Length: 158
Image 1: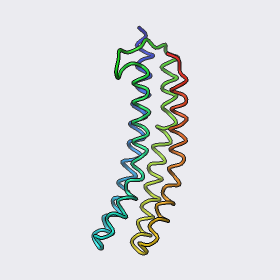
Image 2: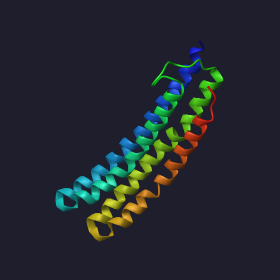
Image 3: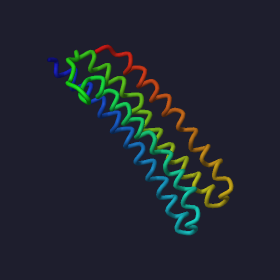
Image 4: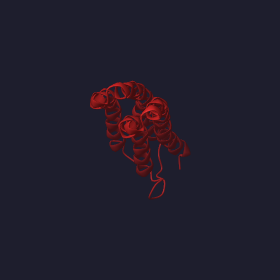
């Protein structure tokens, strides 16, 4: 068994979850800081700012999904590990990179956009939907990265 190929695939799965998760944690934290100030002044705005805080959390979910797909494909979850060549391991590592990298940066960027949208909600709560749309625009790129990662994973032969 070529343990290098398997190790590279596992590193890829870990990177997808790790970096996208870091981006989400940072983004959710940024929004939480802004939201806490608004809620301390007007507790009735909690549900509106909570929606904004949830938005950057999706990148971490996308990274987790990618990680699970890799781990299932290589047999770590729900079976026994398959024998991977070093090239196959590198392919899985490469497949994880789109969501790992884009998830890291888009989670933070979406957090910043959502934190700014909290300001809209604080001053004009009736325009909260506009703030959600502004923050959700960043999501599109995370979805594209997830799609690329999934397409690559599904086309790696094991």
